[in-house]
Amino acid sequence: MHPFRRIDTLCVKTVGLIACAFSLLILAACGGTSSETSPGVMMDAQPREMAKATAVQTRSTKRGMAYGGDSVADLTVLSKGIGWWYNWSPTPEAAVKNSYQSIGVAFVPMVWGGTPTATQIAAEIPAGSQYLLGFNEPNFTSQANMTPSHAASLWPVLESVAQTKKLQLGSPAVNYCGGCVSEGGVTYSDPVVYLDAFFADCKNCKVDFIPVHWYACDVSALEWYIGRFKKYGKPIWLTEFACGDMAHDQITPAIQKNYMAAAVNYLENEPAVARYSWFSGRNSQIPYINLLGADGQLTELGQYYVSLPYNSDTSAKALTPHAAVASSAEQSTLGAARAIDNNLATRWSSAFTDQQWMYLDYGSTAQFSSITINWENAYATAYQIQTSNDAVNWATIVNVTTGQGGTENLALSGSGRYLRMNGVKRASPYGYSIFEIHAWGSMAGAAGVGAVNTASSGQRQPTLAQHLPKRPAA
Image: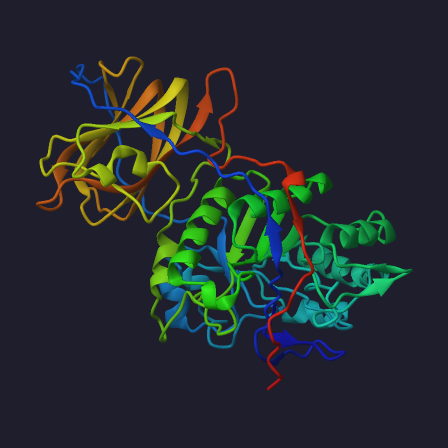
């Protein structure tokens, strides 16, 4: 998708957004849920010397947005949770081109298609850029519309720009298509088949990372799709994604929200994925995908996107607990297991007293490097993060005294089978309420286990791609 078209020049003219969703038949096995056991009575050991810590509320280095209509106010509110954006053009929008660097959101330029020259592109790319995205969906006749050999023939232009500007260069960005380019008797509906042909025609070409697009509504399908591109041995950028392949009268805000939560959780914890960007800021062709409402205002989905947990330690793995145990639950539907089910629509909620806790059981010793807690409005202003090998004697490794709620990310240094959030002081008359709590690190003697299970690639196959209607050029 893109809001720009190049007509044989590098001039970019604003047009409507184009949706490139396709239908997918998914025969995926659903992952299991974590079990919850009854809480026991625990005695705290005397804490060892505590690490000085405060709740650090920063943002994901991976998370971005695909959108070309930002204002300064838009980018400012988005900067709470995204680190970058692109707009299908080599140049930022006029409204933000002089301010995006001070706002702290990086711009990633793109050569959408057409017949650009190195001089033109280099002149348009702003100083300080680090990456350059290649042609947009060239296997689509409605997008960049390039056969693999044609894209390869133009690639030296992009290589020259990347060398001059000292940029990392992304391959052509691909997806499954309906109206597809053909060459030598092959119709390139499959994005991997297209890239294989491109690399065959572009031997020894500079390609530093692989951008891809995806619009299915199931995270196991997304995981399968990302897995197809790992064979190239390069970082993967998911530069467009949203739930778009369902019948649009069946897509609801809750469906978009739940898919976003599951997809972001996977993308944050997938080492092969270097960056990802949601589509889009404002768009009417897929229901309920907008991150932005009025100028400078996030929609409910936008607020959700910028506040979702993230993996602050990219060298560590997401650790999957075997069980979650709590001192209490406000009601049976708000038990501890709800805080580790990878669903930000569910939560654990404790009894309404300060002395409440929840711990995670990892089954064997884990080395912890960080933790993310996504609080509901009933958060802790003071709490401890503790480890234990027996769920009886606890050592405090982080002492938080100025908790702010929202999404809190803490660096950890400690080990144990169990990891506990021990409440000290509540922010409200209610108890403690946590949407999700996740730790990162490694298991003793083995790599950490990702939070999302990998299903066999043979379980799902794409059907014929379908396009949303294309908006006419302005």
